[in-house]
Image (cartoon, rainbow, N blue to C red; front, side, top):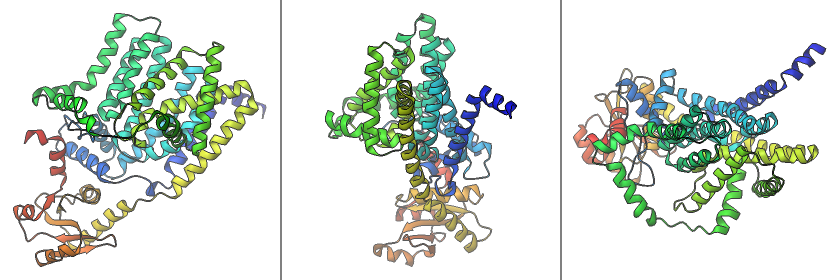
Length: 496
């Protein structure tokens, strides 16, 4: 028994981290079949990645951004290509890999906390990250914003390493990760503020480190720069149009009182996972502890860097003119979790009982939110796609299919169907033509031309379109949505 006690006392940190990672894994994979998100963006992006692997091609750009007529970099598709290639025989492969990466974030956040202020802070941040309801939600949502959450955590790891030690390797990888996160989704623009903050706070600034910071930013932009130069500066012209004109066409009421007093407490509570009043409480205590630590000169350089980074991003977001969806704050999850963990750590320093009560309240309320998320999740689209695939196989055995979407309005359903068929090697551009549509009274006459294969209670019907040519179907309003067309319209549209 003494031997075991000695082992535990010697390896308590590693054992604690292992327990935290087990909890994180259990929460992220519980009820997984009903939680992995499958909709338009997810199905489209995986189909692009699978088609790129099939044709041995490498996308030069990513999809269009929602804010304006400009595109993301190709890194998200490259990452998906790697994920799919690990085990291309299962539809769920990239989802599972991303969820495992979100378990890895927990370990990375522990390391960040240890770099900032030692093992206790590392474990506190690890616990908060492991149970964060927002992190659980993003872990099963295979989308570019979710991947930004992973890359932003890596950015912060190298950020605190660079501020603390100032190595050129940390400088390069910090700026490389930030630029990569931005190329994946433009919400990560605020992370660029970390670069000047870290350079200024680093005690050994020199030209060599500046060059490494610049090189780290430049490398991820090479594909997008090449695309811009070879396509009449499409990207830069549209960015300029958005910054000078486009953004001002959007008006979102944004008073300081609403932004600071309502939006942020709510967002903070959703990231941590508790009730709204928990968000208010954390922010108030964080400000109080920060003021006390500043007055008593107990703020370390790393925590100063974290505070400054969050403050300037906070100011930047105040003047963002678009809607602030929760999925657009994924890049800030690590900063929010670090600041919350630091606040709890300060409470422990003040009084262990106070610290224990504080973290217990947050953990209990967050776990409650987690269970609600896990219990109430549903994946109806997955069931639909699998059922429609089964229907087509039963109706047309030994056939492959060319899928059409009426009016190109049902991508959130037709794309998942195509994904399932493609995964089962049942897609062929010259295969049997079938189309997905929502049946309405105005479309009754369509049955005079095409027979109904089957449908479901959601009003969706699959039509047999094989009696018509592709040109005739196009005139009727049917859009071809096989992987080859999805790939072309998503990443090769500029070559038309």
